[in-house]
Length: 94
View 1 (tube, rainbow, N blue to C red):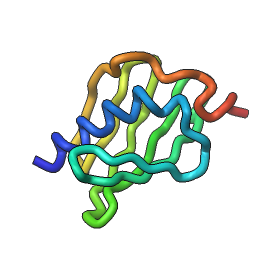
View 2: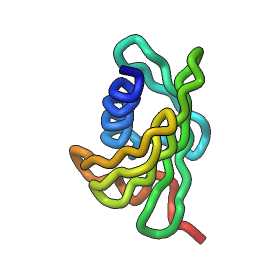
View 3: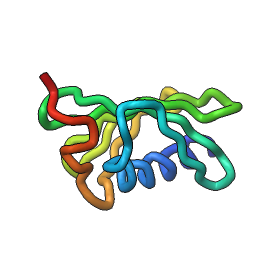
View 4: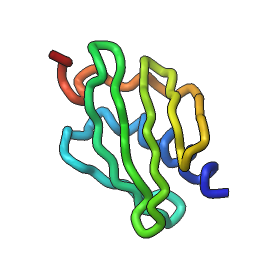
């Protein structure tokens, strides 16, 4: 199921997003490539938005500590990340 693949990829992303710059980034999981950007929603929450290359499946996730919620392929999702997203991912919100 595509949503399951995107969720697994998103879970992996939350563990590695601490090294992401605000520019578009990419990663590959299970043979599928995803591109995404991160931005500060406020001082506590980070938004990760992206899509699957070639298929166009989109996701928008809000990370708050170790909690992740949002949508993947139009399906509501919510899960715990293996570790909280670092606060230096996108810098402080203005």
